[in-house]
Length: 173
Image (tube, rainbow, N blue to C red; front, top):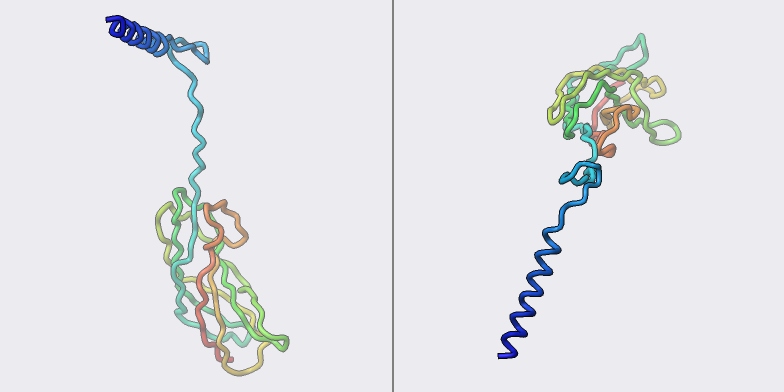
């Protein structure tokens, strides 16, 4: 019988202690009773993410007066991000051969692009002028790459996917 009384006493003492500790009133942290201040979650801002998903040569021709080659390319630029990408520039890089080997050069002009909404693709045909005056007559294979957000004017969630894979074009001079 003593064991049962001791057991009931312990059970009562544990229950009373639990009830008292869980039913204590909330102490207000901001001066409003019953409304504790919760921490503000640290959510990173949504950012755009521009990626060149496709580049194709539509046409190209030599301009003998300007000593340049004019390329017309179609480019798809996808904004994979959760925010609109403001106005930016599209650039064309190409590799060419000189007497010192291969080096990369850029088109003489960039193309201004309008806003690209989040999760959409902008498709267009653009004209680029490249200076090939240093190359002699002949046929050349040039790897070209399109670069979105030339100059990194837009803060993106991923800055490493702005350049397309190279496409080889043949240029006859």
